[in-house]
Length: 156
Image (cartoon, rainbow, N blue to C red):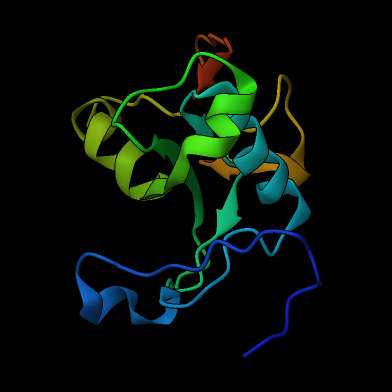
């Protein structure tokens, strides 16, 4: 177990679905990383669903890139109107964990057989340190590039 840096709020994982595959995540402090903590705060304060930057899931043995979607939950089951109310009525997060490879391969399985290649990066340009999925192909007949926003996090 690794000690996290001291900070004001802690968000340990209390419940996981499919315990046999995710037991390592129990007790993990989701706010133990400053980047994820900023995402928590943005989500809590805005009342909006937000995505983390890409991460390596602690329960994955494949070193696959993943990401977390944070859904803020408030007392009364509705998003309060003001920032002060959102802070006071905040009850916790519902967090969804996604492994990028599993999502993309399910989506493009048929197209890959036809020769389609897909490469994803976090951010707005090709940058190896933000590589999420796939391999760039030099010999391509056509190329299409575009950005998409996934719950507040840009992908290219």
